[in-house]
Length: 90
Length: 136
Image 1 (cartoon, each protein chain N blue to C red):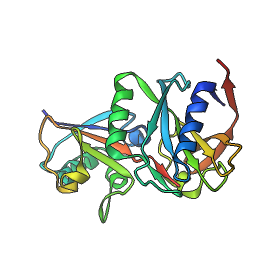
Image 2: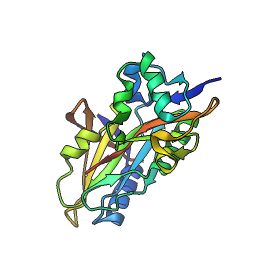
Image 3: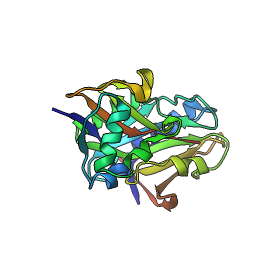
């Protein structure tokens, strides 16, 4: 078992077009680092030096990780992480 | 070109008018690959602002999951401008994240007339497109 990460259309150029990829780690931060090893460039689209990028939504199962622990949120095998670009503008 | 039913145009305009002077926003889902907007979904503007909009993250998650379950995609992503023309702002362009969607802009700055225009926004490039309204 691993953690399934669902990738939005706009980031699938980092995953060879895959809608979902798998990874591992004890926290979201570790999971993203693990993904980066196989999908270079992806982590940079999700995280900046202050943490999760402001216009990216990340969900652990059915919860927005901003309401959990952000990048320190604990994850485990069998979880599903969903990435959605925020829909926003002026 | 965006092809869209009159009834859906009317729902988008009614939503924009109802939320004026705050910006209104939402999506119209359609079958994947069909390029036809079919299911109107009004979203909350989490910013409740006359100059900015953002989908509520949990509502977006639910709506995106529903679309996934129904083999739909966001064919139209709409929002209103309440004091300026119906043209994508700099922030609209920088946050545009659905290269396959038609970005519909509605302007409610004029009380009597509502501008309704559609664009493609990809890689920071805006291309206006024709809107073909299908009368029922």
